[in-house]
Structure formats: C-alpha cells, structure tokens
Length: 284
Image 1 (cartoon, one colour):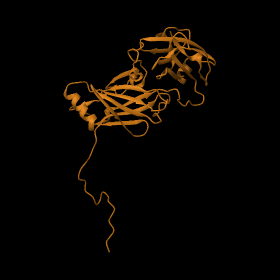
Image 2 (cartoon, one colour):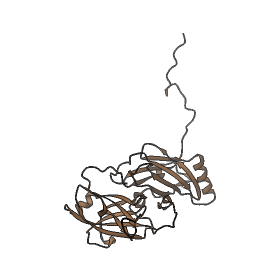
Image 3 (cartoon, helix red, strand yellow):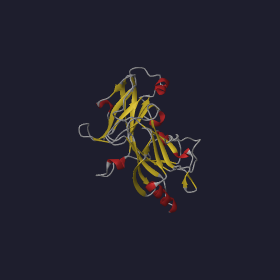
Image 4 (cartoon, one colour):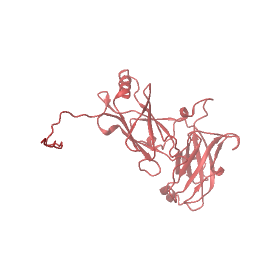
C-alpha cells in the first residue's frame, strides 16, 4: 500500500528562492466627497513615460488601488528614458469607463528612483482624489447643486465648456473670488456638467440658514482650436514626485485656467439638491 503524500508545510520543505516584483507606481483613488476609497469600475491607464507613448492598464487590486510594476514594456521605456536623460514622469488617465460617477483626470507623476530604478519602498504610492460626476449617488440630506458651464450667446445655442473647475462661495455679494469663502468645489466633465456638494464644516462656519444665497464660479481654459479632441482638452496636471499635494487632491486649478465666470444662486436649501437652468453658467 502506497502511503499518503504528506501535506506541504514549512516543516517539510526548503526555500530555494525569493521572488519579488518591484513597484514602479501605485495609485490609490480617493472619493473626494466621502474621503474613503473610490468605488465602481475604475481604470488607470498609462499613456506615456517621458517622451515615449504607451498604452497600458494598471493592475487593479480592488476598485481603488492600482499598480504599475517595473517590468515588461513600461519598465523598458522607463529605462530608455532615464538612459537618454529624458524626463521619465508617467502620464496617467483615470476614469470609470461607461460611467459618470466620477470626473476623469490626467496626472503626470514622477516616481522616486534609487540607482536608476524605482525605489523598493512604498514611497511611489500616490493618493489621487476623484470628484463627483453627473451620476454620483448622493446620500440623503446632502446640500448639493447640479449644473452646467456653457459658452454662447444664449442657452439654446450655447456649447459645453469641457472640464471646468467649479466653486460655490460665500457671501454671495462678494464678487472677488480671492476674498470669498469656499463652501463647495468640484470638477466638471466633458459636457461641462458638474455636481457640487456643500462641505458640512464650511456650511457650519458660514452659519448658513435655509434657504441661503451663494455665488457660483467656474474656471476654465481658453477655447481650443476647432477639431481638437475632447480628451486632449482634459488638462494634464503635473504632480511631480510629491506623495501628497493640493494638486493630487484636485484642490488647485490647472495653470491654463485663466478665464472665469460667476453668478449668484439665490435659493439654496440645506439638505436638498438644486438643478436646472438656474444653476447654469453661461460664458458669452
């Protein structure tokens, strides 16, 4: 009778090697509204390393954690870029394909190196915030505003201004953005659509009553040349090698955003979401 094969364990096996994979870049996606890990079917796409174009999807470890390993084509491109003395920052596009839960972002991130390779520690893990999109599921009791940013002589003929950055400020009579208090902020999508959620702490600090008035602002880039693809208009935000920054959090506007428009929203109610033509910003 043949004796049964014993189960393998540390007591009856011998280690013959140790296989490790080096992380080139790790991305953790944060829901800007909740502060927790972003949910849904999210994708992080590597579009380039330095001057080299690339099209590679980062490996997903759950919806909010994505990893690029230092190997294969991406690893070779990084080696070439470093050897030639070129920039080696990684261009990433973050999106939820087929969904509008979050507004896409494009980030340029430079991994930290040691001996011409990505460091072995977790120093190349970055946290990038994603801001609510048009279909973001609002929790009950959230004070919010849905709207659009358009360019044209009238609402009927106006065209969307893609990828605006939008703010709600107090007091509504303050026409200087720098002197006003921000109580909500958000990112607009390729259709100029946005969702602003009023920050509870900011609302408490402003001692808001219901209803209350606020000033709505939008910042955006000058119009692009005719025929320019919408994706190319999605601004590339240069995050450098910083682990955390206002840019990664989406709190700072891209440098090209030199145009702006504002209007007063007179009837916002606490715990409700306002939408419609009254929340549209028209840039003529």
